[in-house]
Length: 382
Ligand SMILES: *Cc1c(COP(=O)(O)O)cnc(C)c1O
Image (cartoon, rainbow, N blue to C red; front, side, top):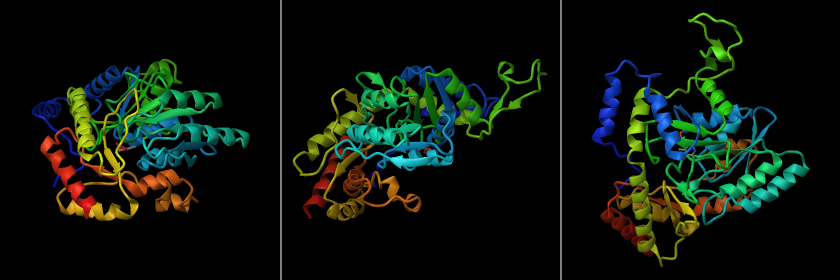
């Protein structure tokens, strides 16, 4: 079976993890700050806060920006549930902005309309979470210019987009956002086993996220209420969590960083080969917007909705583990119970019926790509 995604572990990765296992620190040692510095440096952000998943990063990002009961968070339906759940964790209300069919990303014109009417009804969101679907950068500058007028914060969910670039600038530099979140789950671009990171240029946001990832506790005398504290003293200042990344995970993540650029190049090569092999089949192929270097976390084609299940099952039976990204979040049973219904976000729903994710990972050989294309052609021809 050719999987749809797969991590690559080298001897250097194994050595890096082993070195931590042999060291004095399995967690809260030097590997986490070292990984944070490596990622911040790679993407050009001032601060990086490593946590145990992107889900945790989204949660602390929302809390650091002050999201709470009575507030609203908007995201897109064409994403993993975590992009929306973070709002619910904070007691806020979640709503969705529809997407463009071709990119799968937030529709900026619809966002403009929705913001204008929300402003009139006095129900603007506190946070917007745009998602760089499949690793294709959203229109960051346009989104920032729009939301800035209304005082809406931006948390980029860049779980798919580690290593992507927009007009030459790395996703994660937070030029057009308040916080950017990365995922290091094994199916993503680089992995730490489980793990995530929140990037920001704002020292106060970084400080709050650091506090929240470890019980809300600080040991920094300069930040304490107590004057002249003894050496054993620490203060819990907020209700935080144990969202810490371990040194074992951080060592793996940092070791993987060394291959990031090569992997992005290979993913782009694979995408171009798919484009070539699949053109003229009458299916929707992913489009790269001018100025974007996608990270190509996923290569998603669109097929006839009535044929999708048959094509999916035919390819799985032929040893190609295709997948679907995404069933729209608002149609999940949990979100339906909150009052969302079918028809509310027609473009994301259409995308959800048509999308078929082909295998995409740097270890995929040209022969594998040819085999996937062959099986897809065969399935379409039935
Ligand atoms: C994978 C993913 C997440 C969650 O990442 P974890 O590290 O597994 O918590 C969040 N958002 C999107 C868009 C994702 O693809």
